[in-house]
Image 1 (cartoon, rainbow, N blue to C red):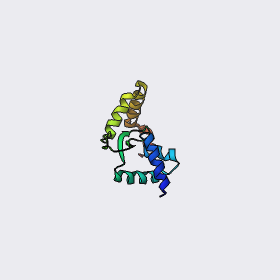
Image 2 (image 1 turned 45 degrees about the vertical axis):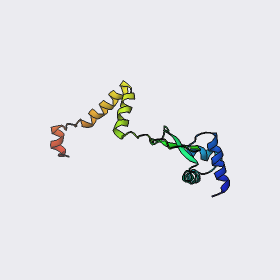
Image 3 (image 1 turned 90 degrees about the horizontal axis):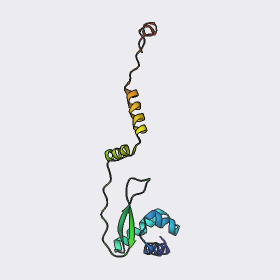
Image 4 (image 1 turned 180 degrees about the horizontal axis):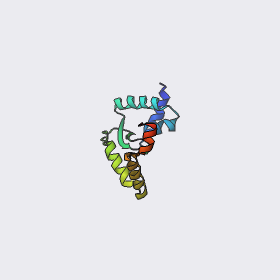
Length: 124
């Protein structure tokens, strides 16, 4: 690991709190090397987790690191799949709800076979 990358990470964190991906993009490094440097700095007590950030693509929070002395922010709880589905259904439009209900009714619907066709070709 190059020592100049640690200096770049520290400079990036002094401007404000950032996630590892944001730091990697700003200093043109790989996220893996940034995570390694952050781990070193955290063990020395120079960096702490200031807050947690949810992105739209991910369900899990990413830590926002800050430079300096401080205590880590509490990690927020992640919603279970049941809670996520309930929230999603609350946001759904009425037409979407009706379409989903119709699709579920169609899955339960059994096709009745004509007795004459069954007699000619047999039961399947």
